[in-house]
Amino acid sequence: MLDDADRAARFLALTGLTPDDLRVSLNESATLGAVLDFLCAHEPDLLGAADALGVAPRDLAAVRERLSS
Image 1 (tube, rainbow, N blue to C red):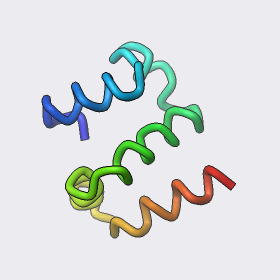
Image 2: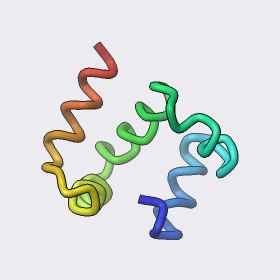
Image 3: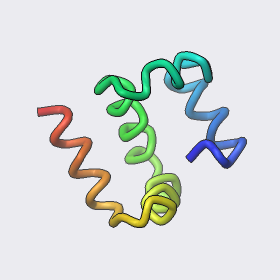
Image 4: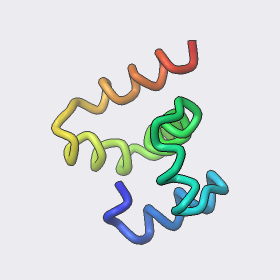
């Protein structure tokens, strides 16, 4: 996801995270939720991330749903 400079800048701006914050909090469910919210809010980002990870977009969306329950 962060290999695209525009996407990375948009993600950091929308979440308020800094690159250092992101690195430190990668194992926290709130950070994972923020990443998944970001991806699910913009279909091209969701499709790109799913493709890069080798998973179906619906699987990423399902993880987000499980985190919020």
